Every structure is written in structure tokens, then in C-alpha cells.
Image (cartoon, rainbow over all chains, first blue to last red; front, side, top):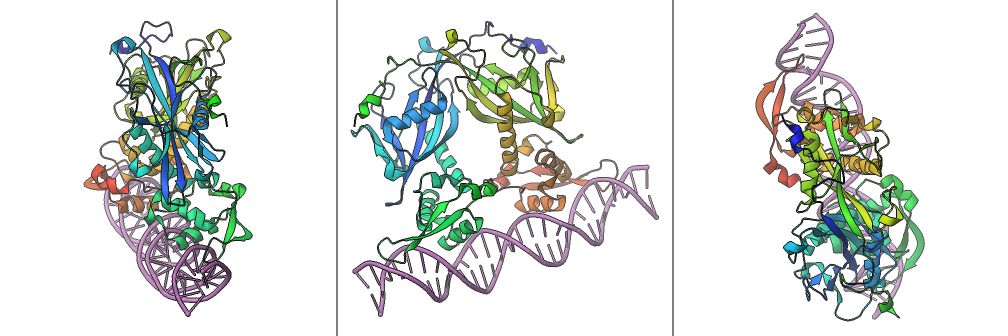
Length: 247
Length: 247
DNA sequence: ACAAAAGTGTTGACCATACACCCATGC
DNA sequence: GCATGGGTGTATGGTCAACACTTTTGT
């Protein structure tokens, strides 16, 4: 058959009109408030059109000479002061109809969103620009967001749960020394009550062998003092790809 | 503190120089030759600079009005005729130094690669443009590729293995009716000999309950005839998120 | 009859779950 | 003492790996 009819010219010189892109980075930033057992998401108020006055995920456009990841870290740094965090790329959203403000005149210019997912330590995450422009929302109460940001958020939440089950990202966000209770509470807050019993959680994690008991004890109000543990990254290596916890 | 010093203007009108992007799509396309027990990757010869004469992953630049996914399907359709396949987005590579041909004059124009991962049925995948421009390579023998494409390929292979373990993508690429031996051979070819014994593989899959025995038998040379099974997508629903197979 | 491929069954080790129970501290 | 939270143990059912075994075909 006439296969060649479908073949486009292979050169950049081709007459086929290519799209021009501005590339943005939008971040799904989670933190866990273990005091109040809440999973929080960072949202910002958009000052300008499109969607002026609506909440959205914090984002920015990528600058010259800046990598995607650098841009993602810059967004974070502009909104909160935090030094303990985990960040990774999530997904790239780029349908030509993402931006409802798109007019036929600007049809050739498109906006691509390379979304990122981050988990930060809540206690460290001091909001910058104290005004009403930036806020932590409990996940369940996040309002309608601009663009397709609710979809991005849903995607980020799925990733957060998967990462918690298979990766040691909790330790990027816990203090250097933590109790098993701290760790358990973090998991409960993110995964929900039903994921595991405390005893079994505890037994499983300790058997995996990458938690060092420092011997130090900490006492928080009533109750028996708890041992402080440290995450041992080297000892974790063999546990890669094995789930740390079950649902 | 002087938080505002770090805050960039929020407008596109900003003086901060944004990068302009052309966005490309590069596909990691796998197929499984169950006759010869080989996992194959599709590579194409680059006709033009940069990297003229080198192998690379098949890719294209995104056109006006075309979604990322559409572009990914177009690349596929240009290289092979196939109608049974699975495709999903993989990862977006966009460091400013990806393209070694980048000159200071073109510093403001960057190329972003939104990589995709595909699994196609080998028997259906007729190569278009029969010349030497397109080839299936066994994974282990893939040569040095252009740009960062070897890295993308490694990423794609990891995803393929994960998807096989947790998702029913094998059935997108098997015939409507297949034997458990067919299924097993596909898994062995991708995951390696050591992942499971045939009996256990069989027992586990059947217990999960989404494989319908059609009662029909098929005979291939010597040996007892095998039952033909059909994948029941509805019955699979409850098995989401549960692994189908172990390593 | 024999080889080859499909399909079944059994065993022991391990693991997840659901509990019950002991320990150490503040009040 | 007793409430509170930390920590330990155990019985049960389930699952996985390994491997032996039976069944049904082609030659």
C-alpha cells in the first residue's frame, strides 16, 4: 500500500507547522500535620488571568538555562521555606485545549505543564508571603482549582500513596530521630486508618532491618517513653522494590 | 526576612527571560517475539544532524493542535502497522544540556522530550519503510543511541516490568484467545527465567479469577492440547493494585 | 511406547492478621 | 491506682516456592 503517503518529511525544515511551547512546572506539594492528623496540600491564589482569583497549584514558567527540576525547586522556594523534602517528576499535561483562554490567534503557542510531586516536613514549612495568597488545604477540602489542576492533584495523591508503600520517602520528611509512633501516624494520616495494625506495622518494619534503635528514649506526656530510631539508608538497599507496608 | 526579593514577577510580561521550547515525543516501543523468546525494541536510524547515522528511539516534534499522546501514536503509525498495543507516557526529559549540538545562538530555544512507552504485538507489527532505517533490536543488544535515549530506554524497561507485574497489559498484546503457556512465555521473556515456575504462575493467575476458560482446545505439535483463555476485563477490576505475579 | 506439553497436587516455610497481653511513665 | 501510650507475643489462616505427579496428545 501507499505507506509513503503517510510519512511526514523527516526534517525540521518540514512544512508541517510545529507547535511552539512555553513550559510550566506545577507542583503538588504535600505535607503531613501529624499533630492534627491531616494531609495538607499547598495551593496559591492566582493574581492574574486566566483564572484570576481562583486557587491553583503553585507553578512557574521555565526560564532560560533552567532545568525542569530546578524550576520545580524554585516554585517551592518561592512559597515556603523548607529544607527537608522529597521531590520528583509526576506527569506532563499538554493537550492543546488545556488553556480555556486560548484564542485562535495564539493557537500556535501552547502551554505545557510538567507536574511535580513533593512531600515536605510540615513543621519546617514556613509559608512565605504571609498574605492570603498561599495556603495549606486538607486534601479532602481542596476547592475547585484552575485549569486541570484537580486532575493533577489526584494523580499526585495516587503517587504519594504508592511512594509511601514502596519507598522510604517518609524518612525524608521525618526528623533525624523519630519514634515508631511518629512513623505510624504519618502512614495512617496518608493511607487511612485501615492499612495496618500498629503491632504488625511495627513488627514488619523492624524485621526489614533498616531502622536503627538508637537506645535513646523520649517521653511525650503520659505513657511509656518510646525508643528513638534512625533510618539506615545503606541497610535499606536490599529492601528496594519490596513493599514496606500493606493495605 | 526579605522574602520578596526572591519572588519573581508573576506575569508573562516579566523581564525574566523564559525559555522557548520545541516539544518532541520519543517512544520506547517494545514487542515480544515469543517464537524466539526475545524482547525487542524498535530503533530508527537518524537521517539528519545532530547524530546523523546513529540509531535512536523513534520520535517526532509535536505539531500545532496535536496532543502529546496523538504525537506518540503518530510516531508509531509512521514506523509500524499495528493495531494491538498499549501506550502510556513515561517521563519528560528536559535539561537544558540534552542537545550537544546546542550553540550559544540557540540558547533560548530548547528541546523537550516527552517520552512514551509502548508494547505492541510482534506478529502484527509490520515495519513500514522496509529499508535499513527501522529495526527491532533485542534489548540486550541495543547499540549506543543518540542523545540520552539509552537512559530513556532503561527507564522504559523498568516501567515495562512494573506494568507486567501490576497491570493486565499483556492482554493488550496477546490474541483474543490465548493459552496459559502463551501468557507464561511472554512473562518469562520480559522478566527472565527466574520469576516463577509455570505451575505456580498458573495457579496464581487462575485463582485471581479474571481468566475465562473458553473450553476450546488448541494443539500445537506434540503434547497435550491447551485450553484457550480469554481475559475478562470486568472480573479484573477487583484485582487492580494487586500484583499478578512475583519475582 | 515414548517424548512433549498441559494440567494437578502436596509439602514446608514463611507471612499477614487479629488479637491479647505486659511494661513504663504521668497524674 | 489508673489512664495512656509503648512494646511483645501468639494462634490462625493464607500464600509462595519447589517439585513430584498425572493426563493427553503427536510420532
